[in-house]
Length: 323
Image (cartoon, rainbow, N blue to C red; front, side, top):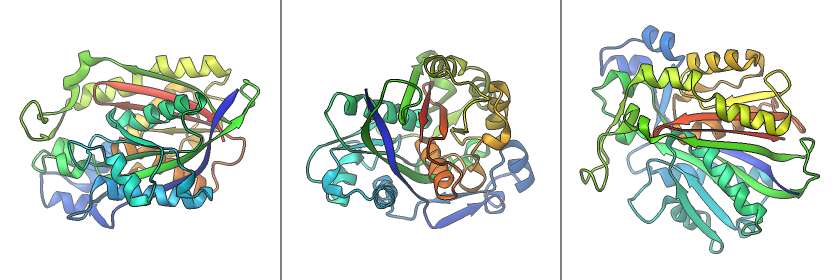
């Protein structure tokens, strides 16, 4: 069996930092209020003229360097984003151009905060059919461009950033002892579309709109509504909350992360949490956290890693792999 294996990771955060104290000068909030409810202390904001494709390119370049893979080896550039540079063409082709990749294929995927899990699963499927041998899978967003900076319920939650992985393939035995992506499960339910959305778009208003969210409803769903995808990947691999080595969930809110870990029976010492330093960067949060875990020598060869995310739509998904 062909398995998709992560060969290297990379990330990028813009230089500008916006702290909770900075936000308290813009809206009626405080550092204590934000930290108590979300665990977030600061977020990074893209500079004027710094686009999603710029963040994605920087993260991808770091991942390529870590993998020791040249741009001439990349067959696929798959970018998960909800904030592309343009309506078209895709920002993935901009990344392709900026990296100097002149062959293969490239496209964007939009599943908001679930985007990286979706993209990883799609890339794995394409690679197992032989359409690509090595791929760049990137999560990147500039949510600062679609926030209502007068809405304290949303503007405190999000930041800008990018994370990337380089995927290659290895022959496996078809068991959970293989390295690489072992199982994935994806879901969506459009009945919940208004719980987390923007109030505009090209065909709706002619403008991107601003983020709108029913926070309590999203919180409840994020903690209690995603059990089906977790159950699916556990059943497919034979693992459970006690037998995995690391849980790297979407970094939206520390309370959601801790609540999810408790529900899954995963000890907190096995959970990678980076939301404090970059807030919710949408599709970028999981690869950002993964890159941190790899570069800090937490995730090691043969470790079993579980990803899980919930995003607007609502979309949700899980993936489990052996490092």
